[in-house]
Image 1 (cartoon, rainbow over the protein chains, first blue to last red):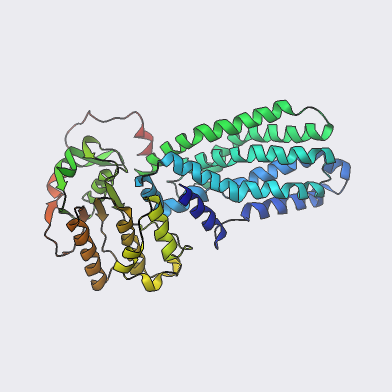
Image 2: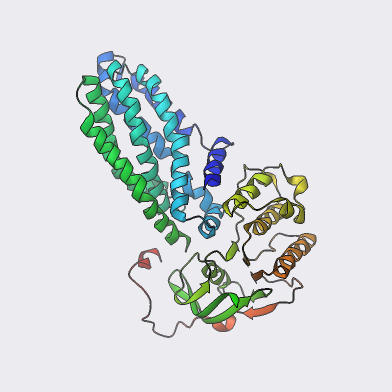
Length: 218
Length: 210
């Protein structure tokens, strides 16, 4: 399984691998916001937590269909399904690799972009923590959606429709943590809820995704 | 003792039975060649044997760690080199040495080329070299000789002979004569009849996927 993890990481860094795709999208979205809504720092300060979280979410969505579709097309998924590693493990490892190549760069880039949006200085800490806690859920929920649509040609639209409602709780709690952090309020409750969603997704969805892949391979 | 055997197996594709009443067993040192026209159900049978799809009725008796499957697609990554591709599969199957497989399929000179730059036949050779690093006893191969030239077919046949000679077995769907001492199994007589009413299938779950 470690082999699979490193293969996925290596593939994402090779040409056409999609590393940086999400990051670039996040960057473009956030730098365009001040042009769109105007440069008033009070206004930007208010919307910054929401914008940063929506940006992270959409950037994550962008690269989801690659998780399984490429392996399905070239037959690797058939071979992985017959290999001596459990399919649930394959899903978990691929979701983890997706998070490392998509979610983690967003966490690292977010503070710099928060600066562009005049994010309140008290909120930086919470922005990083909440992205760190929340983005793994985006990758694991996304892996489940990708597994459901893996057998479909160009299933991207269907996958987005399936996934977006499942992303909403993570988005609400994530943005709430940053907003409360900026205002100097207690952040414990939304952060705990978000951590709960992430842990639930990481623990349960690999099983659901593996079941979906087994059906798709028939 | 057979490595893999099936009893009264019915295989289905998209919920429709394709072949029924299959009984066969493959023991150490045996090569079973499946024959039948296109669309007869050879691929479906092989995928069922490999455990990729459930049997419609009857069952496959084999240790889950028995079968190495090679289908129409080779499972290669275009941006990884030949060595990286093969080393990955070797790692997945428990770290067998890849050097003999590279040598046998004449891939040594292509070692550091990205798999995306290989010709169709070279890709196929790499896909088949994967079988040698799995260390699994039963090779289940679906049209393995597609896009191979005469020399490569001979190399492949030699690999199968060596594998079978070392106590392995192979089940191969192919249309060409590979020069084995083989058992030929024609699937045509087992074609599922569609004029009988069936009430033995599980409609509950995979209805939606037909």
